[in-house]
Image 1 (spheres, rainbow, N blue to C red):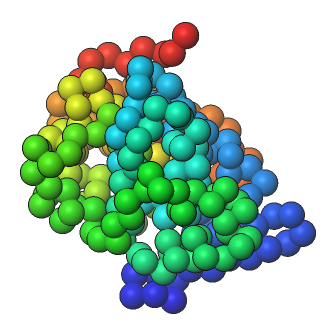
Image 2 (cartoon, rainbow, N blue to C red):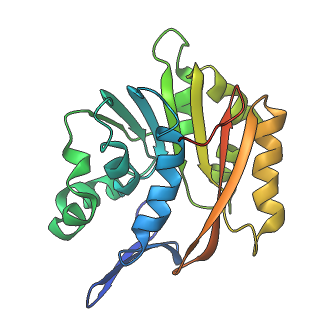
Length: 220
């Protein structure tokens, strides 16, 4: 346990699983489906995504996918729990899973509350081409505020004019109201939204929302 959450990693033969506060976060057998779906629709729609912000994602798996783009020069990751990023940057089994992404020289790691961190950023400091939000479902206030209208409005000042944000948005089947609440909140904050989903065997159908300042176009 950490001051922020209870982290449990299990292994059964080839299947490595991460649980946070007893909630499954990934299975190594199919996590690639989730992380590819989270990252690539947004990243591949950008001509040259040089600066990327990842909020959450302390396991380094979304980062692994982001680093596949040669144009990427810098990635800033803001994850609350230093125990999480330590585990996935030092444990050999975890490093194999994320390809050593957390050791990338392109990465700036910030262990902080993303809501407060973003509020303290000045627009002139840095604007990002892509923002990947890989957080647990909003089951408490500390996470819920990162799905709020206030947070999404703050995020606009950190995005380039042609930038894209993508948010994991829970199950559109099991948690339909929550899924569309993310879409509606993004729209209310001034983004044009695009919703999509895919099947991840460990979770079932899983959803994501893209937000941008112009209509999202599927990359050719």
